[in-house]
Length: 494
Image: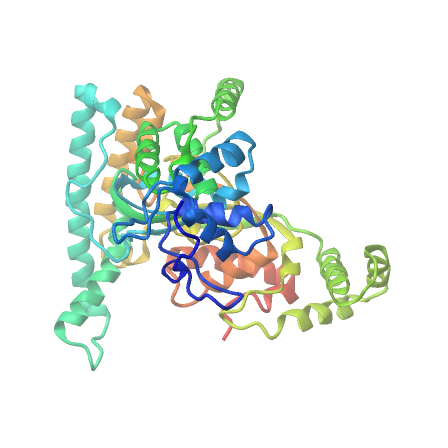
């Protein structure tokens, strides 16, 4: 046995305080230390010393120790409590950071929607220029010579159009936007180019490649892999296997036994069979984003719910007593309570938690470019969404119109729709790769007022991208009409 006299300073940030960071250890060992707290009276530091002193942990104090060293003791512990008994919460203490490169925008959306507990930072087409030839070619098309030729030809035209739009927008913007007094010619050119990137990207299809950084705990990553393996897209299956291989080098036991969900696969097949005879009516395509509430709670009842929750927080009374008291309040009194709770909010503040009890439902029709922003930066919204489609119209960026580039833009949109139909006749799922950033997707969303405050505050500011700003301005205006006291404090706060 290794001596219990171990220098813990290599693994904890202090030896004499009640709060300390734990580091320089395999993620699964950290998870074991945290898991022991429910069954051991010892401190985390004491449990860590015991683990480090155990030969089964396969760790020494030598300089050769690596943070990716696999612990057999940790493995056995997780096999018993996480895998064997289903105590999944233990897995949340082990975290992996994963770099993911050269996947399609379609697959990145599937990944980001797979589990809300993951964190992402993605390559932005608003600030960077995708390189010609950077697009995903579905494996299924590689064996279809005619469709493959059509697909490759379409992507050549896409990049030709993208570069044409970039140059046209740069020329137009140089005439429209004044150079700042302190800017060099190079700084001005870069600023103009960033604005051009933002609008030219709308012609790019979902096949275009992207990179992202991902952080997730063991539980979220496992659930993510199950969702990806149950996806209708082969690219997502391949991505899941790659993530599993690499994440398993850091948290090996926690990702054991990952497989597709039979429940999701069978349910999807049954629902597809159930609805296959339905033929949707002709859609009415729109040009810009549309957002509306479809389940807006009664204004006074919502104010009463908030006041009831606030009374429970502030006074030692029962829920029934709080409800009865609140019923005696007039509408102006209820509005004043809401004002008292919200008026001091500033830009970086989160509103009071009681807003999470107030639920709103929306239908949003937005471009794929807009959708990718929304899915990344929401915090607690629940989405049901259509698959990528050409059915609901598309957005033409205003500066594209102003620069006289609409004809070129619409030409490539029409080309994408023609290719979409040809590929859909072979395999509908593959056609999604030809949907452009401009095409609309319809989304049914449920969010609390807490979440709406986050989204409206962030997305109606002057710094927000114009497309998503229009979307949440519509929702904010509707909130002003129906729930005025809540709308008063939802937008940009200083």
